[in-house]
Image (cartoon, rainbow, N blue to C red; front, side, top):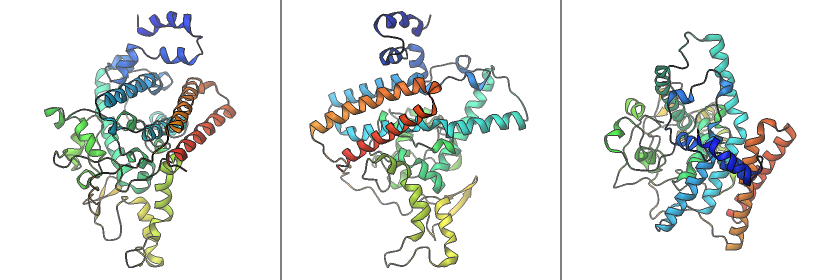
Length: 400
């Protein structure tokens, strides 16, 4: 008998079956905890039809917030409160909420396209309940993850969709939730976050926490490195692997940090800048970097080539996009000492925002539970509430 069945009678004596407490506690099961750490077998997760695939994000969401709370508690008690900030954490969680709200767009498009190609053009069919199929798909999907993850870093327009994930100057559990709202429209994938050491010889094959710290660094040697999901072998094969340097540990964030907590700005401004402003940039002498009518075609390259590309920067083809021969070219060393963007707020305002944030989470958890039955009017109204609330948080954090 699994944990859910044993827990439900107890919950029914305390909460109604539609209360938030009931809905949260019924997800705090051992099964969901195992799913959060991938401690599962193919037989538990393989199903014959798309419609039977559970929403694992929802199933493990309560555990995620337990992890967040425990991590912050441990960091605070151990004297490492400099490794998180209220404004950064709330901004990251809000980005995660927004990405889930728009799953009806990108992820649905990806699934429909996948099903269409499968039904119309498949060359062979593997047994869905075979462990060998599961193992083959693990490697195949992880390689696709490598390609997709590398694309959102090196293909300018896609980088505009992915930038927000790297905009945090911290590296903790909440950073994993700082996802792009519409990235799934092009890539039905998730980034992964890991939090411990280099795992010794396992790091030759698997993407370890040390490798992923490099991926989130803004030091020149960290740029466009370690794209792997489960395995690091793809990076070693294609020349994008870089080991963490103990004498130059990763400093997190973007090459040029945003200095704002405005949610919509973090989500979309890089796309806007690539499409409309990069082609109008001038050099130190005031001369256009993209001069003349003929060269204006290069502004299209600016949106499609790597985000660090300018005329004269060497690139080479990889798969269906261009990659910089030297990703660290033009990347400055991070300032030292590092000064993180963290405008101060008085305790009354912090208390108000915290209470409002808890309210937002409660409404969002109900929204995720009930969304299959919501009307479009209710669905749209809640999305509008989420966005307005997030924008309000950003304004407070930026002291605007």
